[in-house]
Length: 182
Image 1: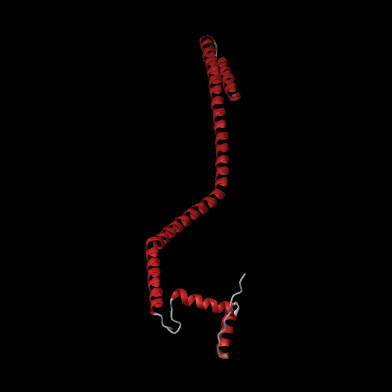
Image 2: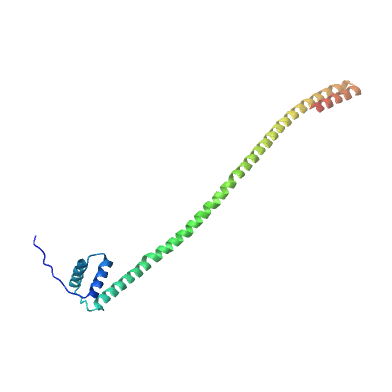
């Protein structure tokens, strides 16, 4: 490999301190910083004396305006409608949560209501069974009463033609006692 020919530049101690500070700040050796400065001025075709580079400022301002315009367009087209939808969705989710909370409260009450209803239905069934038993007893009583009454009527017809008053009273007492036994 051929050896690179190095050249030297003379500068004052004050400029050397500035170069040292720049290299220290960038964390690179002074030679590398110097070579990067040369590349920068060569590529950008800037004059190091011109501190107020209007081309750079105009480019930055134009890019800034373009960026702000893009952001405003995105805000108008995407962000504002998205925010509205998110707000609407948040409100609907709150309503859903409130509905679930009320269901949870009601679900705590529901078992007690079902227990009460079951107790009521059991009582109703017991009353119904008691009524059914009484109705069947009533029917049996009617049949027994009808048998007693028919026996009385037959016996009365037999006694009234032949029998005395005492026999009729005795028949009435027997019938009365049979009815009492019901």
